[in-house]
Each structure stands twice: as C-alpha cells, then as structure tokens.
Length: 318
Image (cartoon, rainbow, N blue to C red; front, side, top):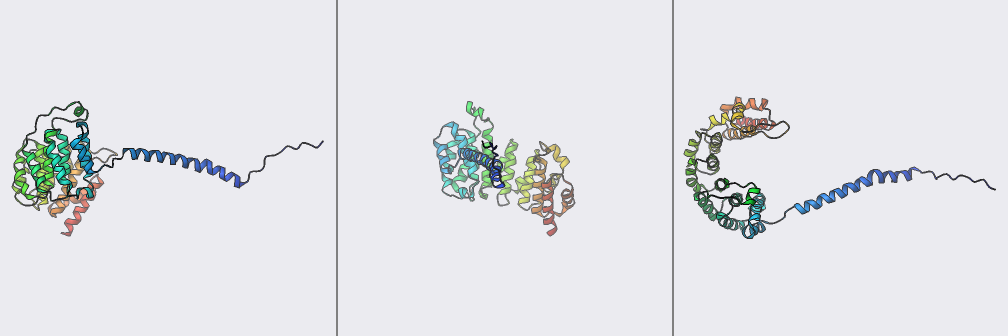
C-alpha cells in the first residue's frame, strides 16, 4: 500500500497575502468611513432649510403663532446673503409683514426690522415711514403665553423691537431720519441711548453732532463709547479722551462685564479696545501713538495687538 502522504497546504505567496491585507486594513475602514459620511450627509439634508425669503414671508403672514417667530428669525439670517438683500422686490413685502406684526409678538417685529435694515441702501420710502412710525408706538404690555415662556420671550422684547428699528434706520443711509432719532437719546432706557448714538454715527450729515457731544457725558459707559466712535466716523476728534479710556484694560476690567477666559476667544475688553483702535486709525490720531505702540507689543490678546499694529501703520503714514 502506498504511503499516505500528508498533504501540506499550498504555500501562500505574496500575491495572495496582499489582497487579504488590503481588505483588512484598507477596504473595511474605507467602507466604515463611507457609511458614516452617508449618514452625516443624510442628516444634513434633513436639517438644511432651503426655503426662500418669499416662503418665509408666507409662513410669517399665514402660519400659526408658534411658527411665526422661527420664520422671522430665519428670514433675518437669510438677508445676510447679498443676492437676497439686493432683491428690491422683497422690500414691500417685508414692510407689509412688519406693519401686520405690530399687534402681535414683539419678537417677530424685531427680526423683521433687522431684515429690513439689512436691505441694500437706500431703503425705500415706505420702509423709512414704517420704521419711524414704530418709534412712536409705546411698548405695549405683553404677557407671554406658554409657548413664548418656553422660548424665553419676555416683556422687554417690546423695547428691543424699538432698538432694532433704530439700528435699521441707522443702516438706511437716509439723513432725513436724524431729527426723528435725536429726541430718543433722552430716553431713560440706556439700550435705546446706546443704539441712538450708534445710528447717528452711521448716518451722513453734521446735524447729529450736538447730540453726540452730549452723549460723551452719558452716565453709562457703553453710550459714551458709542458716541466717541460715532464722532470719529464723522471725522470729529472731541471723543478722543473717551477713546483713550477705551484703551485702558484696567479701566475696562471694571466697566465691562465678563473677562477673557483661558482657552476661549472671549475678551469683551479686547473688543472695546479694537473698536477704539479702529476709530483712532480713522482719525489718524497721533496724540495716542505711545499708548497704541505699547498695546501692539504687550497686550495679551493677539487680535488687539494686530489692530494696534494696523492703527500704527495708518498713523505713521499720516
């Protein structure tokens, strides 16, 4: 009888091993990544809202109360798109929705004012009329319903709607609204005074300089800062002493709520300093050059130091 010869498994050459390794170390992980990416894209497609401005307006005007505020918010965000805000056909519809919202939720009116203010200037006359008329309407008492309370709406939203209307008028580029804004500076609401100072600085003309000079003595720091920056936008140096204060971190530590956090890009004092540096650069203010040079070398915030360097370049070139 022939000997039984134990059969040996055939030798596996490198051409056999390589495909197995490819499946184990390349194809399987690739498949996992592909499945993960497909799931991510699917969720993104579900969450992405591709509605147009006209669709949001339709939901605002005909949707239920619980759908109006989200639609107004999304519409105001959509206005950041240059193609959307350049559409002149949109302005009449926004104004109409703004007028219709005056007896409803103040938050809807606030975001509609924001959307109107983001239209490319000049604003149409009907928008100016609607916004200025809203300034004269008192903040009506408003008791939030359960849905409003759930979403954090409060009775102060009425004054916030007025503040947003002031901002929108400041963005209009129409100097004829200056006489309508100036009396509002004497409001007891510091938020309104602050926004009036900002809006007057953004509008052309010199009629508002008297009010801005008065605002330099306001008891609230934010209002004084806005007034100084507004004057600088008009080429007026009377706010330079206030701009100098805005460069002092020791002073700002007491005047600004919050502080820089380690590992986070949160520095309220630094934002104030950057605003002051930009205003000083617009004025080409050489009198504060030593302070600006010191900030460019020593400030702990790199963005502030960069703003100081840019201001120094302008000052030196002048």
